[in-house]
Image (cartoon, rainbow, N blue to C red; front, top):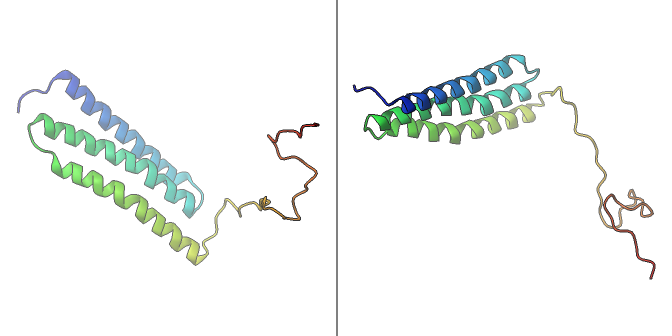
Length: 134
């Protein structure tokens, strides 16, 4: 194989280092986060980007060799489609099983519906324009 140009070697190295850093952040998040829902977030976001960076470096190398680079492209597309779907399904299964979260329940927010008795009509909402005294 012939020697690759220096700028191409730098691009591949940058993609590999960036992908490795994202994968490292995802692995650390998987270890450090407290419960299932938080641990699910780390690998689906950071590790997906990390593996995507490594596969992008593989595509650049394949193109530099004059190949199509179809295999890394298909792996990347498959990963970016299946990782969010599988994470969503795992989260739905955990919710269905009643797996507790350390985040606690969502706060109850008032609903600003017309005719709602819980909303005080004498108080203007933030950002409302004052009435004109014509």
